[in-house]
Amino acid sequence: MLFLGKSEHTIDEKLRLSIPARYRLAGPSAEEPAPPMTWVGIALEGGPLRLYREEDFAKLSERYQDGLLQSADVARAELDLYSSAELLRMDGGGRVTLSRDMMDTAGLGRAVVVAGAKSRLEVWDKARWDAEEQSRRGRVRELITRPEGLGRG
Image 1 (cartoon, rainbow, N blue to C red):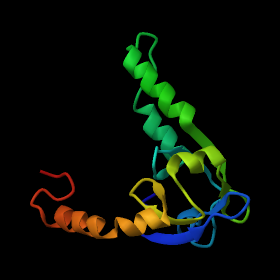
Image 2 (cartoon, rainbow, N blue to C red):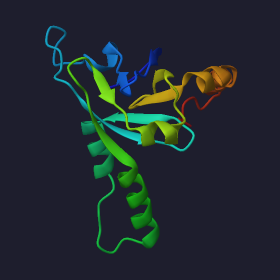
Image 3 (cartoon, rainbow, N blue to C red):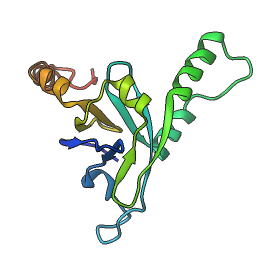
Image 4 (cartoon, helix red, strand yellow):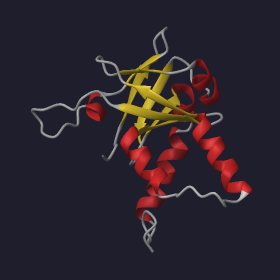
């Protein structure tokens, strides 16, 4: 699924975040909405909080095979990544409940922006999102106008 666009949301007092409808109502057909999704959340220090659909996260993980003879660096990186990830089950109202630790790590307040980032969603603190708006627009312009485009060279 391709995640595009952004929207502003408020995390409620129970630490629930509403996943925008356009990201969660992607069923087999327009008349048949998808069942509630499970997301994998990874909070990056200082933000953002990254959300992957569980099946997409599993596919990304399969690209890297486990091995008994992996290096200490690879083993440490896997431990760091997977131990910081959390399964977030979406309720019937389209909300996921975040942990306090996840919110603190990502630096999220109650007002947030949920932004599409190709294969994932990113949840940003609204004040930080707004503060970076000008530089983000400049980066988009540069990506679109440079000859190699978005990584094609």
